[in-house]
Image (cartoon, protein in one colour):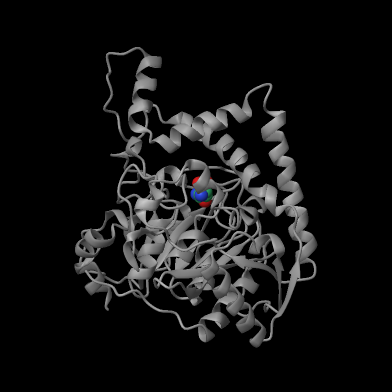
Length: 442
Ligand code: GLN
């Protein structure tokens, strides 16, 4: 498929899969070298940016996010802004105030979240690359559900300038693509210190031929609670990795159990402060009852335009930061974070990566998701959250299919700044694993 074909069929393809909230009208790729899309929490000059929220409808940023402008400078043409959970709050892209993306392998199932639209686009369009964002697993989860590769680099590797914050100490911008080679190619494009984002870092350079992956550690805690089919595919993949010459060793990482509760305290604490700026006066949506007093206007506006999950997280995060509770929740979660980092450092001193399935099950059906409680959905993140609170780079690779043909993924976690071992294993794995493409219709 040529770039022109993709562009001329864009609206029809999107009508089927709902990967984009907004998209380009151009049918001519001009002198673009490649087409790309971006999660809709990255600001873009030429397209509305809503981060999956009704509260931002009508927001047209005056500037491009750093990652988007670097992709454009490298010759990329931005074709669409990807549907997602509102502000990144979710695991299935189902908590969206706008459109919900559909899994390209089965339209009745979710793409995963919160970068669901990005993974969907990467699976549907040939040769496509998409920018995703992970706070607690939002790149690896959808990559796994949609059968593609996804990498969240080390925290601080990529500038967050122009990102609509969820949790500032957790948010990482990364790459989702069906081609493993794109991970190295495009992380190199978007990486680098940026004076506009004080949390971006001076960093070791990423090379063409970097360190190779030779050994992985499989934590006992990472293979508990899996569906039978995920467990079987994972075991088979371990055998293939051994066949490729990797050492595989089982280890214990007791801290992993505490990462999920700690994550939801940290993430909601940060989210609740970030959402304070949406009051119907500055960005996007302003349709409220303007005759009300300030406070009444703010609360009626926020009641109307925030979704349920955003409200839940404001309540949770405000509570965990409150005087009297802060030490019990927020300060304690910060300590757990240090324990998780120490556990990774201990294991990664002897191994190149920690390996486990990415998600405990495959993409669920929308009717099953609608019956899940918020806690059920938080619990589904126990495998992706630990690397995210540690700020360590992590990558999901497709590793099998269940009996319904839904993709299964495995997640490699490397030490800080060690993305090169992830690129290496992704490229080698792609040559040996027989990936199936979804049957794509417009
Ligand atoms: N599912 C997790 C959450 O809801 C992670 C989402 C993310 O990484 N943005 O917070």
